[in-house]
Image (cartoon, rainbow, N blue to C red):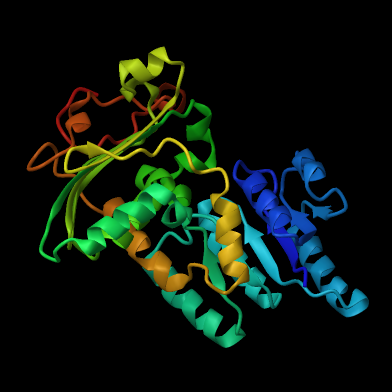
Length: 338
């Protein structure tokens, strides 16, 4: 039987992947919500879906569908800014629908505790999109680690550079209180992957944390991980720039590079397939990564001490809006030139 979906955050970057997943699994989008009305993308998937820019009218519409048309909502997909996830998850459960939420599920560990109580009371489920767990390369790595002796400790380097322009700092993504900062916004999937494969966190050290990069050291039960994340184009390796690319992703395990360049196109659909079969990723699955990024966000960087990622030595950069706002945002980390 086909399920009825609504989607909140229809104009966002990630929304088309959710629209595709709903379509691929032969389900219906009956309503969508976004404060911005540039949502023509919906025409390619569900042109008959009702659209709203005001949450109050959207909420009323969902209620009217239930009581006047006997149309029940089964799922609400949430593709909104990070700081709104908690509220929109609660809206979904109030409307007696399961919530399917993009990363990060929430910003703080105690938000998960509160949502657990609501989930228990409502009888509905909260699902998180943790699609890297379905990537073949990651699955194969997990099988390899699981088959190795329990006391084997792996050395891992994680690098993720995804360039963002100056618009980033004017948007909610550049506001740490809303996005959670660089580690939360672009790194949470990787931390989920690492904890899923290598076990519980034993150490969490931050070397550098600024507006455009974050770097540190994580020690898990089965791995020592040096990691570096950045949204600054200047940090990209020169060979990547020469190819005209703006993103670089690298994961090495024991010095061996993982092939991780493709295999992402259908992962959201596979996440949805799992959820529809009650085999998705819930609150407990999301907790380790949320705890990791919360600790990173609230840590005082120690600078270039101990075992740090090689890219952490790169010169720090000024905030692009520093002149327009009349001050230099605080740069934390090392004594590197800013």
